[in-house]
Figure 1: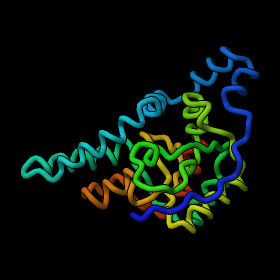
Figure 2: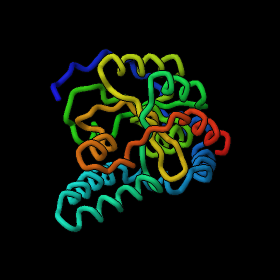
Figure 3: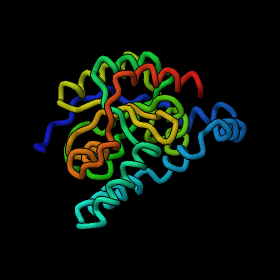
Amino acid sequence: MPSQEQPNSPPVKPVSFQRRLESSGGDEETERTDSSMHHTLRFYGKYRKWFLRYYIFQAKWTRLPVVGRAIRGAANLYGQKGSSAYLLTPEEANAIIDSAGGLALGPCTCREVFHNCHNRLDAEIMVGLGKDVFPHQRPHDYRELGKDEAKQILEECHKKGLIHTLIKCRGDFYALCNCCSCCCVPLRLKKKYGIGKALKRDEGIVEIFRRDIINE
């Protein structure tokens, strides 16, 4: 994919999540945050870069004779039961933003790991439990995000040809990412290795997300 110049992104607010945690009660606040986190998502968030590398490594084995078919089947099962992404239209992405509670902005982990293009790095909008889990683990890499700015980021990324995906770990939607075809792991798994469950399409995804948020 040809390199693209990174668009001018809004300035990062100087108050970090780390400062907010410290100013709001230190250990007590941390304890309350920890108790509310989904354990699976917290574990996945901690080792997310390792997981992404492993997904691509494992996917290459789908091209082997005999065992490749079994590996693809296992990967599709994981995409159905474990971690996967949903392809969104721009309208659906905006509706997700409207339906979400608080938001946080952080780096697209796929681009952070694979460095295949020069699209903007701060392109992953954390929603649901993700807005608490990821900033708690990496407070200096995330900042709070308003809905108007989030929609502006979606529009900028759409104009650059990036696609919007809603990402889920187990039962939890945690991020809306703006993905490129050269770095995005779910997209590469689907298009290059035939693991279709890694990136799905569901016309009812906005309602599914809303029900998930209510049940948090």
